[in-house]
Image (cartoon, rainbow, N blue to C red; front, top):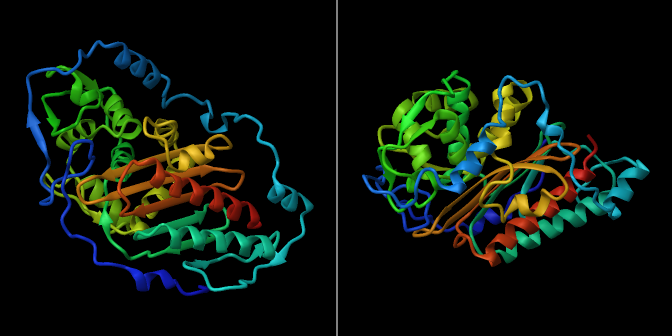
Length: 362
């Protein structure tokens, strides 16, 4: 049963419908047309040490392996007061003590009403102090417990869309060893694939890795050019994602619940298939890891996909957190991207949602 009212919705401002691209941005232009340019020159040789080291890392993702990489050990973390409360095992029926700046559902039993309400208040305070439009989706993948804030507010989807796009290819059995020529690059992109010499060949698996781990826009564009959008749109129909792509329309707009459904689906895919586990491993320890992952991956395996767009202020992160009771956390904002001050907001929220997650009986 849904409880509480999301007071934050009353504060929403009308978000700019257009979305552009600046150097360092990972989104499309305001018209949605792909920002690409044909090149014949190279910013870096394809045989560079960086590329060779990354290729070596990619080769470890063997979809025929029976190894379970999701069980990678993390350094032992010192127990805190919430761990001590959970270990006592006192279970209480959940009761909200206040109204909060978010809604929640399916939270039934907790280890301490006092502690979980304190946690909820701290989350509310972070949201209020952020001084921006912020939307959040949290879901415990065992209990189904959810927290959501501003679930209908629309943002430019940015690079988190690369994750469900890759998933749509994997579930349709694309040949991971097929080679694709880098004959075009995404405008202003300076990452690995974009910087390679024109004519460099990449396997489909390599392009997936660069799109997910480095958020390489050119890698995503080459996959899109090869395989199109129909499988992605079919996936959205299947999971109720509500986001659709089309010719030269590699990015779109979405709300946080739409992108969250994609990451719930990826979690299930990884639980059920080798291809899904390979994909999740590609999302661990990404090149840009200053948000949810930086806060939580000292404790857990965190598979995440960040996104940013500078010109029209979009800064997002979506993560599958492999805690003892796994959860998915998606945070979408119109914060100015990639500043330390704004990354701290993501990290603070991640830590508090970890506290909340541990306090829910699973």
